[in-house]
Amino acid sequence: MRTPFEDLLRDLAPQVLGALVRRYGGFDTCEDAVQEALLAAALQWPSEGVPDNPRAWLITVASRRRTELWRSDSARRKREETVAALAPPEPDPTPAVDDTLTLLLLCCHPSLTRVSQVALTLRAVGGLATAEIARALLVPESTVGQRISRAKQRVKADGAEFRLPPPEEFPDRVAAVLQVLYLIFNEGYTASSGTSLNRVDLTSEAIRLTRQLHERLPADGEVTGLLALMLLTDARRPARTLADGSLVPLAEQDRGTWDAAAIAEGVELVTDALATTAIGPYQLQAAIAAVHDEAARAEDTDWTQILGLYELLNATAPGPMVTLNRIVAHAMVHGPLPALAHLAAAEADPALAGHHRVHAVRAHLLDLAGDHEAAREHYLTAARTTLSLPERRYLEAKARG
Amino acid sequence: MKYLILIQSNPKSLAVWETLSDEQRYAFGKGHLELSAELAESGELIVSEGLVDPALGKMVSVRDGKVLTSDGPFAEVKEHLAGFYLVDVDSYERAVEIAAKAPDAAYGAVEVRPVLDMTAWDL
Image 1: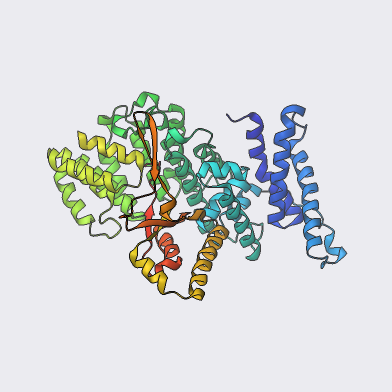
Image 2: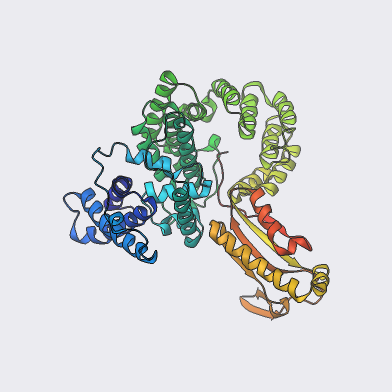
């Protein structure tokens, strides 16, 4: 269970790190110092109480720690630097305008690998400890530690600076942040509930970080779209798995358990973004999720609208999964037979040839067409070739009829 | 995504091993150590180990609630697992690239298997 202290610490983490990097430079050392200050706070505050100004407390402790780290580091370098260089520069006179945004952009710097971007974002912006990130991602702590230290070396070597990128780079850099946040969300969302014990909830973490980004860039339609998509998807979580961890497909979920507040917020966000900003793939995916969420029963789903949205998505951001979902929507509007023909054509795409989802979709369409025997064969093929255990169980159950 | 890279030993790979000079054998072992170090450094390694001779293995079974053990796989087993790398990487291509760096790949073949994960997309 998350304590109020943790929420406070996580909110303050990027602000404190931003203040330190602004004042002293040296992202890598500052980041280590902030981690240690967060740890000290997590140990002290519950017994001694939260200080009057927690942000200032953390900045003071982290600054002190940073000086110690910096000194021992300098000593190792045999004091090559001059004494003058040891004096920290004067504090930045400008107020910390947008440290969280700057940090997010730095952590998702294009010179870093995707897995490093994820680890660094969770630690530097999310304020999570290495061990927590490791548990959440189901990899050893040493692996995460290495990803983070490598990422920080990379940032340093690249001379990436702690400031907002120039306007011409800005859209691409924000797009990279959105990809990382969506990856973190999916990492949490797609994990089965059975293994979630003791894991930091990456889904909530991704929503929290995306919300922070949205507060800073309220006019960016894709940021709004991603936040809406996460809320509208996460709203179904209570209905998505049974107690034994098995998956419940959308059509069979108990819609009464969906989170109505999250749906209302998501719908409002995506409606507003679609009306006021340039259209983009996250908004379209959010709009599709909204149509599903607004149907009181599965049979009330407005498939014509969903098909139209997939056509748009296919035109703006085509991909193998968009192709397959569009075919499923097509079948719901025009029947399974034309959709089977589309599926046969889609299989020419090497990204889809032999993919287990193609077998699963074909099985579903054959079922709709009444050819249950052939459907069974394809469900079994799909079950054999999926990489996901819950999916395999679901597909095997479908094959049994 | 996690992948298991399996290094099998079989009569063919053993025959190749017999033909290697001491220097080549040293380079072989060093190649594995270097690959492990490289993967640890890149943050892609979960674990890598080499296994001892299968003659030292035990077979374990439970019958009527009783644990029975017997010595190692039977002699007619021609192929056995000699070592493995468990990696967490960005893509299948990357896992294949790593497998190709295992010294064994230069003499025989190395197997790459995706790990079954607990995640699933919406259906």
